[in-house]
Image 1: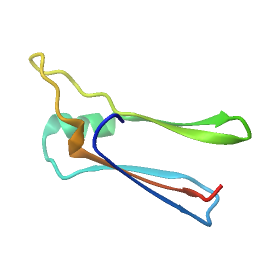
Image 2: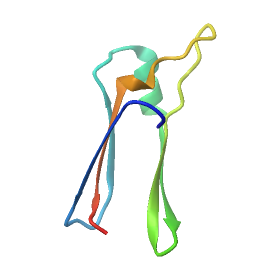
Image 3: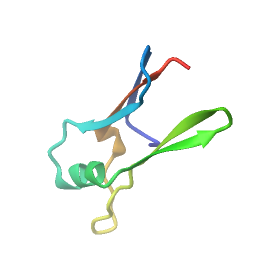
Image 4: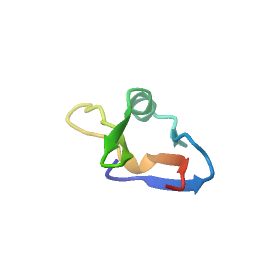
Length: 77
């Protein structure tokens, strides 16, 4: 996610939760959130979270991904 807000909260937990939100009611923003790809990939001895939010082009224009906030809750290590 190259733009927008990202909040990470690490704590004593065994899982990772990714939430995407927007205060915008624009259909293209909501559709991008619904179609977002969220993956957990093994990297070395740990894991990496991959979040891919792709804007839909409309008449050659795209929305501002600054409209999206991502919240990640994950283990400390």
